[in-house]
Length: 101
Image (tube, rainbow, N blue to C red):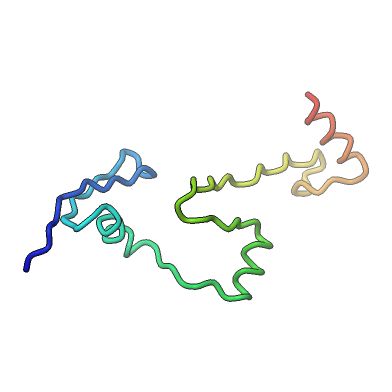
């Protein structure tokens, strides 16, 4: 017995220009899984990985809901004395001035 398949266009929206692949599959999920299977892996999270990843700011997402967008934190402007962004007592006032500007 043959399984009904279609040819799907799977597009990588993060590439520039957008990359496309043609995949013969039973459904959309199988086509996407075929393409991302070599790029992503999924394992059940253990307690240690949950603790460390949430401490790093990784949010738990729920499949079927709108995906969360990962926005890297803004880097702090360098301190005037060139110490790599670590400010002394004047740092808080400078940050407040920048925030209100």
